[in-house]
Length: 353
Image (cartoon, rainbow, N blue to C red; front, side, top):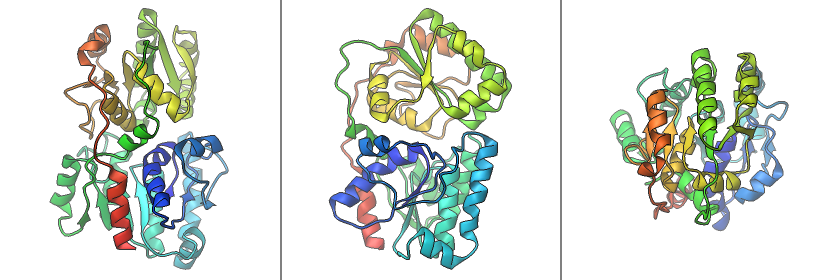
């Protein structure tokens, strides 16, 4: 299993716990895209420390850092023997990768280089535009072509795969593993409402000045009306500083702070009157929790919650004000999915090994 980001740890943790429960041996390799994850983060998820860390020199929190990080990892692609012996420890089986990050494509290339079949978790999502989201859509297209086994999380993703790769191994999981990740830290029913939550981190929103200005304007406006908590990814802070907007954020009435542990985030999400986010994982989590959600994007490849508690904003202030003015219109009952995707994934991995 090759992963490199916080979200990938969260979403693959259910599969790792299931492998451990069945005493199935596996090798966990951390690619280091998010190299500063504390031990407590993995402990909370119920997963072990990695068997190998390929890179831990610096957090890939900017485009420049990400390029250097990727360059360092590319050296492991020089020879098949090095990839198989060093990265995979001489093991065979299947290389499980997840999602649509730079870690995903590098993990896929490493698996292919080592001659190990690649299985893609959360496969088949497509927006049909290389620019929305960018670069995630390009990553998905590349990994879909290179993988051997696909685990689509929903019907739309399965249809995308069958239309393009009908002769390949497609194993529907019924839901995304994020639903199980929430179940692992399922929050108690909130007795009081907490502050609204805002969290934004996608490349498409951080490297267009107009969108950054719009975001800061929105934070300032909403924080004047009600308590707002802005949880800041490091790349987001970097982008705001470079754009000369960070001081405006700090002077706003919002409670501005760093990211919080996953269990705290789920609890804060469940108690929020509404959430504004551009994250696909956050959209999925909010859909399960039934929290009114403003998706800070022009388009989404995910259908979780749309038409119910999730509203696509297209960066429109009118849409934002309409939802935040009466968020309970969009609130839905929190529901734990009955399907356990990790069981389906592990069943197939065992068959393939």
